[in-house]
Amino acid sequence: MTATSITSSTLSQVLWPVHQSSISISYRMIRNLILICVGSLLLAISAKIQVPMWPVPITMQTYVVLVLGAFMGRNLALATVSFYLMQGVAGLPVFAQGAGFAYVFGPTGGYLLGFAVSAYLMGWMAERGYDRKIIPSLAIMMLGHIVIFAFGMAWLLILNPNNLPFTESLGFVYERGLAVFSVATILKTLLAALTTCALWQVVRTKKSK
View (cartoon, rainbow, N blue to C red):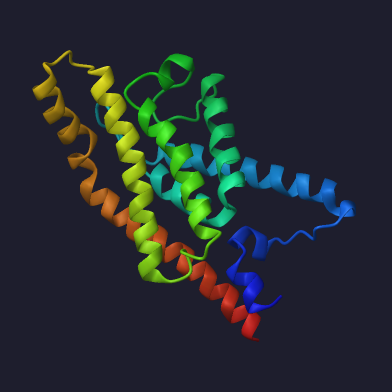
């Protein structure tokens, strides 16, 4: 595999390649299903690694969403997050603090939708090589978090769980939907960038031998 092919591929394509032939279609489908199932399991596990808070807990999910997006590419990452969300809607205990259709329309609903959008965006960026070096990787991971918080805060503002006047609701959403996560978000952004860069370094080291 040449350096050019590595640059145009995601980590999953490099570490678990599939040849573009009709014979490999079934193999490709099985590979993708395995990746989707493993990815959704990681999302479920990361939901349980949490600091309980109201209305939205601090979990490791955003870290996993960002890394999965960069690792898998946009389509596979979106399929993974969608499969995870469908499990939760179906009643499986994969979310941080509940399950079912009603949970998705609760305070965490915007963040869950943001997971899907962010994963797709991270995959799109990774397919263009932005996850290889630490500075661009930090930038896209920060952008991924911004997307998640944008959806999460917008939904909290619409939901207004405390029935506050609009100006007070803005303060509540900022405090409980963003500010409280600031330190954890910085650490997870850095960790996600380091993770993807470290994996690419492993790939480069292996190819140079």
